[in-house]
Amino acid sequence: MPGILIPGDRTTKQKPRGCCMNPECFDASDQQRFEFDVENDRFCCPKCGADRPPVVALLSLVHLQVRDKAGKMVGFGGLRYRVACDQKRVHVATISNDEAATGDIRFVNCPGCLKAAFEENLPKLNGFSLNK
Image (cartoon, rainbow, N blue to C red; front, side, top):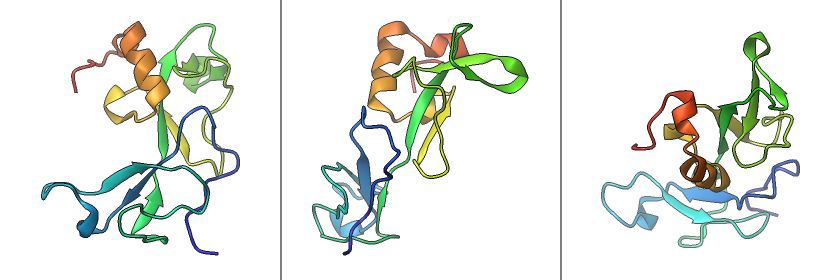
């Protein structure tokens, strides 16, 4: 059965996003891809119907990682961190979940982390500006 699969161990707190690289789907001439919310597994592009890589893909979910002395994740040198959208998480990336984390707000696309960043001014803790 064709379509793009969503990893079974990916967080369900954030809605998955897909993208289509077919220029016919772009809304503007300077666009590099068409992005859309994914409603179910084995999804395809809602505009053109493409259902296989490299035309259609699941976007990696990139979280905001914040230094926190009480954080549950231990990083380089024993420093502790937390994910902005879920303070209880003990890890972000697995071998298959297509998730990552960064301290640089410019690369974060997790809606929950972005919301927390603006509400709590979290990037300032990491030394980055909220002005992209």
